[in-house]
Length: 325
Length: 260
Image (cartoon, rainbow over all chains, first blue to last red; front, side):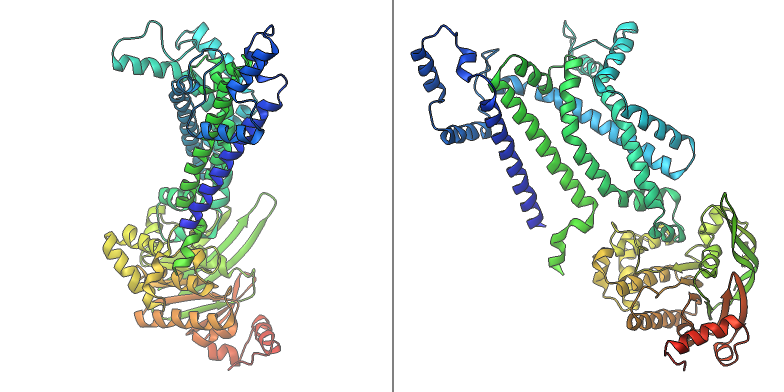
């Protein structure tokens, strides 16, 4: 057990270092020189050189790299070129929004998708199965920004039920309850659009796994035991199908994180994804690097959580147990 | 006694209908071991699963399967569910995929005790230990998962599970065919011994005629969905009347077994 987690943790650290290294070199092979993007071209070469010294750009590459790693690990991202405020402060204020958006979208689409998938497999040829097969293939074939713009047009413009943009109304509503409600109203369309785009493929995947599992011998034995259908469905079939479901969850995470960039931009949400795009467009290298890093960190962390869930769900991968014999 | 009367089982597919069991009548007496032997695809397994009404939806049943006042063929789902396991428990090829891979074997046995017998968790756990020991396994194996057990151990777990509710009958479908010969003999001896000790009825389905003959009270030979011969094992081995029985016997003689 311990060796399993040691390996997972080592893997996570390695990925983190790779992300940092990629960030470091990516911004150094981009055209143009870091100094020229912040100083006036009319500066003298001496002034530019002083600037390079100031930023540590005159140091050998490996020293620069170690300084960079240390700063990343201590969340010291420097000042944003655009706002002149510490990048970490900018990002910190945006993380909760991104987590609220992605967390609720992921949770809802997996719960709805799983429930539909399980019930589709239970009654083959029934209404739920047809719904799952249709919605799965339809939701798969639309680009996210298109669906999101249509939703905005329908539910924020034609029928203005939900706010058009942002995470909070202006002026801000008074009282905690009103603030929370206002926040939820702002999140319905962005999170809802991700759910709409995501639950169908979940449902199809879970259905296919469940159809396969329900044909296994141990389901027959569970039925012979005189257990209720409900118990067979969830305790035996779904629990056995859970490990591969978690694998998909795990594989879907990076895609969902990159989806945040599009979704937050379409809905003008104050989140890390939109911050990333704004920073890149504004040549704000410290900010863009930090945003990449934070999104990478979020992905690595969620992968670890999914791994933990996987090892609880599937006794066969708790390899450490064998030694206890 | 479980009394099978004129039972036919047909698998209906969109293209054609395949008869698996044809007009079979058979009594499975309480407290005795009845064996059905025959070649693969002869309808033996369909018969066993038919008795518990566990056949896939494309199978249609006609005739009757009587136990007490219950006719399994026509009874409601709820009544059939009560019949399953408490009256007639199933022993499958445990060595294969009969156990749910993600639940410890102890919990899988305890589940029947809790759900069907209304036992509390502690009480059920103690009983699981006893049941496992009865089949010759250490009680500690309850914490293990199926993938951590050998084929023979899994088969014993499945037998322990079948004994859990002290049913009147055990229906065993090829309980040993995925095991090596030595383990086969051990497992079948355990099963027969437990059944005799508790006075349960056993319906043993196998293609292994010598194995069946060595433990059963009555032997039935099944061929192409029909029972072609029944009698005491001695009589059938000494005076086989149906050509299929003779074929089965000679197959074993050719393979060098020698029946004694």
